[in-house]
Image (cartoon, rainbow over all chains, first blue to last red; front, side, top):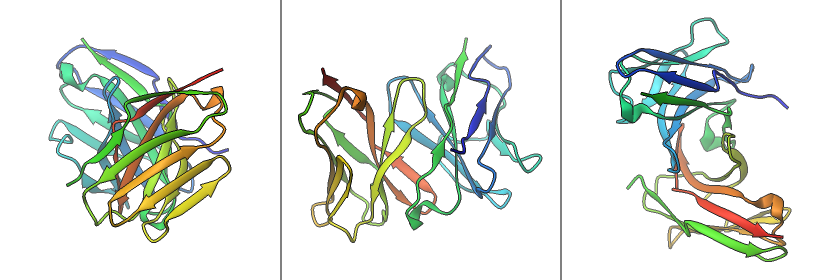
Length: 116
Length: 110
């Protein structure tokens, strides 16, 4: 079964440093997403990406965050200057069509980001 | 208006019993209601989903009941098994964004 692959599985970074989280979505999928889950809490939407541009973003996704699909296969989330409160599990997801057509996302296994 | 409220927070059910998780939403613009199952260390996985023009959907042991007028929906797991022990998230979606509930940690006693 096709998978969404995320690397690294765990990243530790110092406060103020830049991090890049990487994702390889399923190859024929057109819609890409980042979500995060603070330990023990709900999964929160960050951003959706389609046709090489952001289609929607949440209030969490401020100027410190950016996304990119640099080479047609990878999908990255960059946090420019990490804060302690950015510590969370970050999930990448992809879908073939828009979710309103009745299909769910496929989520990756996540990258656990720890900011110290 | 973007919230999805989920209860209970945790649930313990005997093997073979029925597990019931309830959710409520406010925004009538939502048009897709998925349930996700998450095991420790893994991402959420789509379990079953329903659209608001349907009152019930069943897939194997999993059933979603949907009450559009009350803006409530629930997941029933029949004949619950230890392998069903996981965190379950209800969610609501419109277009590309999924709003998740806070999750229910389900434990099935052997």
